[in-house]
Image 1 (cartoon, rainbow, N blue to C red):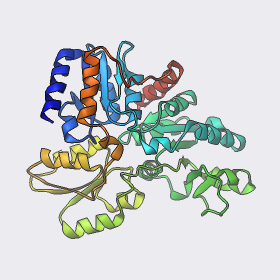
Image 2: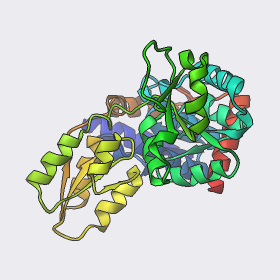
Image 3: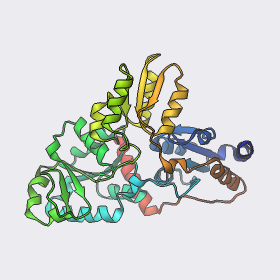
Image 4: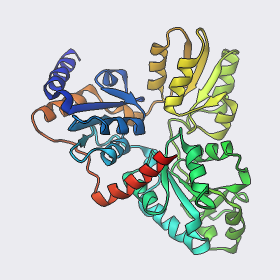
Length: 360
């Protein structure tokens, strides 16, 4: 480890301001040590694009984050990813072909011009481009409510993907009734779902679909984050029993019952601010990825910060000191490995969707 630290430091020093290393909150501590900036996916991408002297951006996160950095990067900036196998299962749950098929089928039975697609930041570049090309936008967990307002000012229904739980929790915050929230089931089902709860390809071919679709305002894609759906309402109940005076904050990617049982829900940055603002001696139970919780423990020694449960993102965990060493030494030698490329047509449409997000 000492040798890796030395070699990374030497390569970084050689590259100087031409190199920027971005570290997502969920990275392990030894990786964050070498990050020039720490934050969430969108914030880091925006920061990188503002570094006028940086030619090389190394994104320590999962793949869709590096894609976003490339979309927002300046023309002269090249983006690299230490481990291209570090993907996001939730982003993969909404594949472009499936979304386009759903869009075509919806267009057969409703005025598609009144349906506004919203993609969570945690999606592929192709899906971001789909939103840009179809009058939609991107949102983060911190500005999802504003994104919903933007969409309803331009249409009557929202098609939200890929995270069902963020969509549902946001809709509830906006006061949208449960019966007006439906789930798009991408796999044809042969059983009758609860009224107003699901719309599947099978239902779309039957007359029964018209009533629930007519009342639907939010159509959710059935995706989820396995890190945050690991938490349960029982975890919250047990935490309150163990820490009677605690405050519990969770990420809005958690299931609705977990969010309702907690005191607050907020984005990654929001969770960090919540803990920092808590009074000295307070006990804060945090429901999010364990590497971030561990970091909050060390950054707030005057408070009792504890995890709601231990939930690790294995894809974030893939990036190691060895990966970073290989990456920066390669760049220092003029060798460009694991470069992230986004086709121009995809990048252009995706950038439109991201720019729309900035308006909210």
